[in-house]
Length: 300
Ligand code: NAD
View 1 (cartoon, protein in one colour):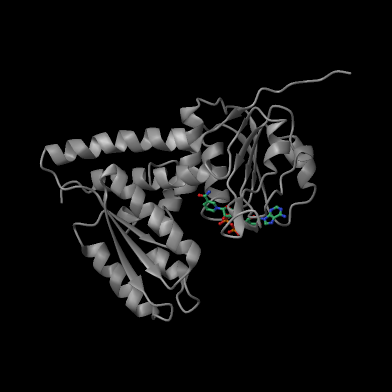
View 2 (view 1 turned 90 degrees about the vertical axis):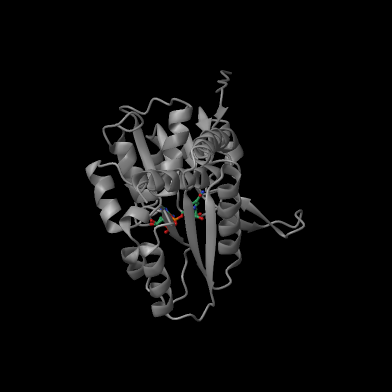
């Protein structure tokens, strides 16, 4: 019997995000030493969504770690759209604020697209504004949505050769799948892939995945990508963050990715864990976007 051992390497979000954060910390210390104002990220949180609270708390904690100033404006669940519009308009005009982040999802009375369109594109550190999306598509430097940007930083850190590879991106959302597919197909050092974008209407997903050298799973279904969907030596990036019941845990749940990790790890050459992978990179990328927004606005 022929046994093939694949040597798998973990794409470790802890290591890479730490490296990004150390670099930012030094840069911000330099700013402080020379008497400059420091970058400021302002967040808006509406309602009482537990997951949103956790995400915001983590972003604020990470800002503090690298020396970025942060602030939160909180609104009640039933706040009107006009109240939120007023707050964003104020932030747009506040010279002390470099990055504006509105934590999604929003309550139903508030139109998400209207809010995205309102944020000053120069402060749009989430990279969701259509102007920034347009720039991304045209390969013009801009704010890249934090999750795909974090994945690109990871590929760069591990110096993964993506050129000419077939990348399959599962998911076509504006915040992950779509921008990811654009970045991987771009003529850039960690791009140059041939990209297939799959989604909920894709037929023969398994066959398509089996042709992939790189798979980015961003669909939001725990353990969806199983070992039999992965080619030997493929690179697997797991974006999913899914809360699943877990009686072993005190909280009653655990966090699982979109990939069946053990099965996938036995076949692939590189894989990101969940937790400890893309999630940490997303926050690191947001911090980087905030610093870049500051640099572009430095005259203030
Ligand atoms: P979304 O719900 O907006 O999009 C999901 C996409 O998956 C859709 O395009 C849909 O067509 C596709 N899809 C759904 N079921 C499918 C199926 N059976 N086969 C093929 N495609 C299918 O989700 P999102 O905001 O893009 O997030 C996706 C996942 O990534 C979620 O688990 C989310 O929690 C997670 N996420 C993680 C981070 C991070 O920092 N790690 C950031 C954002 C989102």
